[in-house]
Amino acid sequence: MTNHIQILSVHIQLLNELHFKRKRHVGRMMRELNSLLVGAGQQLSESQKKRIAVYTVLGLYVNSCFAALRGRKLGKTEIRNTLHLSILTPLLDDLTDILKLSSSEILEQLNNYKGGHAPEMLLPKYLYDQIRDNCNKDLFYQTFRQALIAQDESLLQLEAPRLSDEQLSKITYEKGSIWTVLFRLMLTGSLKANEQEAILLFGHLIQLTNDMYDVYKDLQNGQQTLFTNTHDIRHQEQEYDQLIESMTQAFLSLDHEQKHIKKCLRKLSVITSLGKLCLEQLKSRQAKTNNIFIPASYTRSQLVCDMEKWSNRRRYVGLQLEVGRLISRLINLHYK
Image (tube, rainbow, N blue to C red; front, side, top):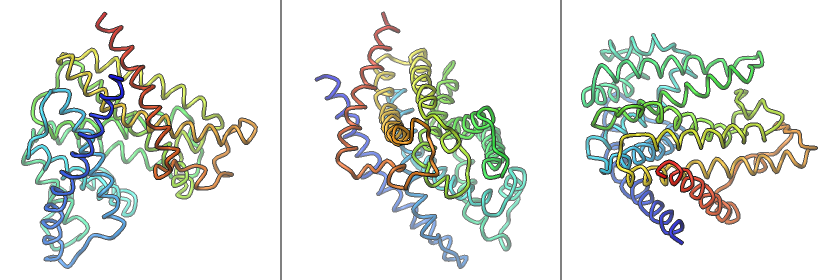
């Protein structure tokens, strides 16, 4: 019963933070950005608006977890920085994926853009300056540069030669982990000993969860991931379970109060449980094709984990309880 109450409490808090508070903050910010764009004769596309909505939810979720770790809610400047970075992220994806700009080209334009040319740089430049002026400039720049380089490497996923599991694992880790560290830098306070390692593991888990959720979309786009290329989803499940345990142990080792670490881990279980649900769905497809995972042969509804279905919602709650019990067991072993 305690586990049920704790999970319900986490969901109520996240609903408030990621829906009600986020909508108010994002609404004000979008009006601000729209006025900037209209003045330059531009506007955000519907596709960009949808992606911005997804990224702002994810960005605030990530930093809500990190705020729980320190036992203090996100401040106004932290929320603003987090949302600026959340909006900047899909715009940078466009610069890389559509305009084929390298990390060095993006950095050069962000640092030297004066307006009057390259209109696609107007909003990224504004957001970049806002973030840089409100956090540790040197540390932000170094990490931002690393994140862009990781984005460069991810372009290999769109090329014809089949990538090995080792190559895909490296790309997946670097793409997710470094960006997650970047989000942590939107919060005040320096990282504690070993905190970056825990964050890197969390970022890796986020990217894996995103990839398993997007198998159908990635197939349509010709993008290779560990899930589009595998023939046995059970192998990915084993890796994911091991990552959950390694990440939990890494957070438990941090020099934070025990009650704050527990709350952070309960929040982290929101996304790990979603990953477990996705894996169950992908495994069910594999079971129907002689235990060989053939993603190209499945339909969209068979690959996409639809959270509008009540059956998925009920199973998600059950999986969250399972993950909660695993976390509780690891906590008890750690503090024994």
